[in-house]
Each structure stands twice: as structure tokens, then as C-alpha cells.
Amino acid sequence: SQQGEEDPQALSIQEGENATMNCSYKTSINNLQWYRQNSGRGLVHLILIRSNEREKHSGRLRVTLDTSKKSSSLLITASRAADTASYFCATGALYNQGGKLIFGQGTELSVKP
Amino acid sequence: DTEVTQTPKHLVMGMTNKKSLKCEQHMGHRAMYWYKQKAKKPPELMFVYSYEKLSINESVPSRFSPECPNSSLLNLHLHALQPEDSALYLCASSQGPNQETQYFGPGTRLLVL
Image 1: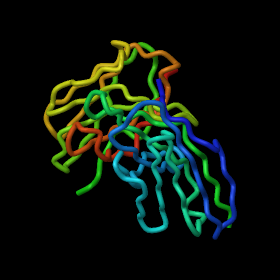
Image 2 (image 1 turned 120 degrees about the vertical axis):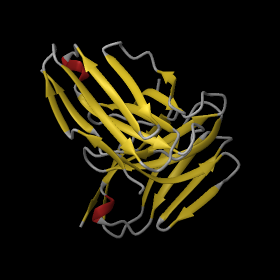
Image 3 (image 1 turned 90 degrees about the vertical axis):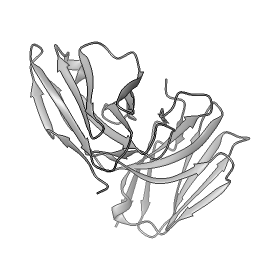
């Protein structure tokens, strides 16, 4: 079963605005990852944050992790039309078998020019 | 080379056909994965190969048969599929089997008639 929940399910913004997506999970984790998927294509890894980290940056991306609330957020600043995609969080559970990631339901982001 | 390749890109098959999906990576990764993804849903893990051995089978029906001929190749053999098996099949790899960053191929779009 999928343990990650994301909100909002869909988000529509104008170019230049910031986009924030949230992810909640249920069990203790090793790390949390964010992936992007353009329509009908493979997923692209964006960023990985470990359970002992609280915030991480990569270019226009900022990820936070609150293990006490079992939640994470992905902020995309100064969004571009090319950021239009589905965004998934994925967690590696602390006591799970090696390699297994569980994906959240995803947020569909639309950035209008 | 940071690419995972998948062939074919599209596949249409009847319920009595036998076909195979292929996945290849040359990054020296020792873990490889098969996922199934339905439209507007997150990827669902099917199989994990770790050091060329099947380490996780997520209770996938036997009409799906994975094979890892060597550390660079992963196959998914399909036989007697059902229309509900129509989906995007994604292959991924990671350096090791420890919930690390996964690199995804572009997927095979499968339609079962």
C-alpha cells in the first residue's frame, strides 16, 4: 500500500510564482526523495533528504523535512512553464527491505506562461 | 552514461501473446527495479533485483516473469496478460539496494487487447 499522501493533488500557478507541495507519510524513514515526471515519461530524481536533515536546497528547489510531523514540503521558486509536471515524494522506510521506495499520490503542477 | 534505456517504447499485445520488455543501464548500478504505473497514479513497485538476484517480489501475478541476465540488463517477460495490465512499465536502477536515488528509464507503454 502507498504510505505517502501529497497535497494539493493539483496546483495551477503563473510563471514567476512559487509552488509549494506537501507530502505526509506514516512510518519512520531513512530518507525522503522527490521526483518529477513529465507527462507519460520516466521519473527524474530531484532531491534526497535524509532523516537527520531538516532542510536542503538545490537550485530553485527547497525541501524541508519534519520527522516529528512525518511531513515534507517541496518549494519551487520563480516557477517556469517547463516546471509543469507531476511531482512525487518517495520514502524509504526505516525497517523495510532494501531498495524499496513508496511513492506518494503526486501533485500535478501546471505553470502558465 | 547516466541513462536507463527501455525497449520497446510502445507495445500492443493480445491476451494470448508472449512478449518481453527490456531495460539496460551502464552505470554499474547493482540494483534494478520494475514498476507499473497507471494513468494519474504513482508508480507501484513490482520487482527488485539486487546483485542480479531477485530480492523483492511484490506479490506480482505469475504472468509477469522478471529476469536479470547480467548486471546491466533486466527483462520482464509477459504472458497471457489481461486488459487491466495495460499501463506504463518503468525500469529503474540505483547504485545499491539501500533506498538510494533511483534512475528511471522512459518506460514502455503497454496496451493489452
